[in-house]
Image 1 (tube, one colour):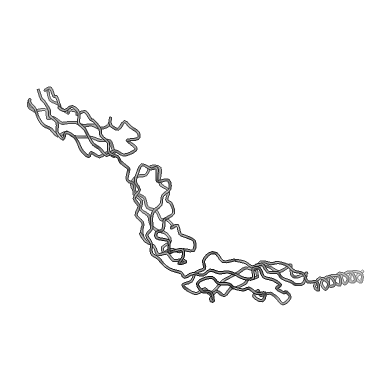
Image 2 (cartoon, one colour; image 1 turned 45 degrees about the horizontal axis):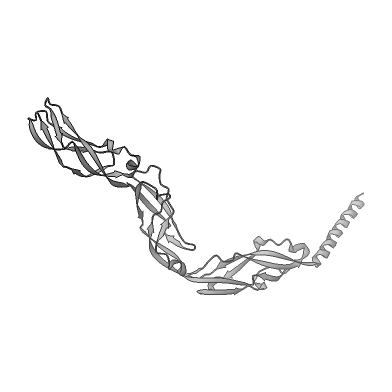
Length: 297
């Protein structure tokens, strides 16, 4: 029985060895992807655009092994120290891809790599605020940015047209009042860096107003026993009124003009300056007339 099992194991090993010898002699081609890495780019230079990140390589080798090549372990390292400003062409030959001696690199695609190199420049530009859905609001937005300017660094052809930089649009509250502070990032062109990358924004809200005219009756505040008459009975007020009040209407009914007459005022005609109470947010620009006549009987 032991001799039988020994013969079977020996036959299996011989079969595996025969398969290996046959397939090992047979050579096949297989395409693999090789990662491209770059090193050594001189200071003060920058690549324009995103460089190619891989090569397609045709590998020839034993059938039993070529399909086991792991692309994750294959890297083509490009020496960028020889790149100069302008257009650069790098020829990638089969010997540029390092593989075991068991394999042969038949073809590399693309065989030529194109690189566009520019000088890196630095510019200092102002920073401007930006807001979401601010055009239809009833208030004016005043923003202060700290710092007000930033230093940009990037390709010369990109920065030559950059005179300012915006922040990422800030969302505004539905019912803004007072002020708020926030740190916001800058919106930068591709391949441009900024120092600093974020700025502090302080945002204040000032309600929009418009001028309007209201006619208001003059109310007499008097506690005495006499009969009182005022002339004129109405005054004309020129006001600054918040836009929401103008849109809603009814604000004129909240305007109050009154004159205070002391109880001991003797009979006759008297001149008084009247007072005006306005709805919240309104501002008096001009009142005509400035004084009224009070007749006491």
